[in-house]
Image 1 (spheres, one colour):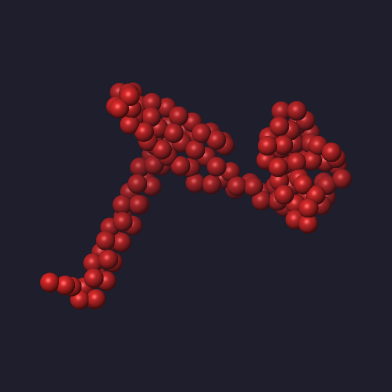
Image 2: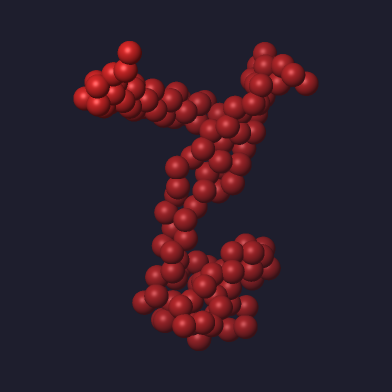
Length: 132
């Protein structure tokens, strides 16, 4: 017995609604986990549960967009340490920027002022440790 097209569509809609509801609940649980475990300003943090059954890793990405107006203002002051490549559209060398944070804080701060930072969604990864 085959279902009508309308019945198949209705069943798909019901299942999609359940998926959406589950995604909302998962997002709430993940927020609670982040509240308990915490996260780095950028990067990952891992902890094992007290009972040793799971390892939880929270990861905070940061999206960087170049503020072209600000970059034009600071371009000449950045000098050869600049983490920006001179192309028709400036491109950020993130490794170089991170190195500047340790080696030349003044240039790092100047370069960073030409960026718009937007924290991404913190991801939560759970790994069972029972199989170790």
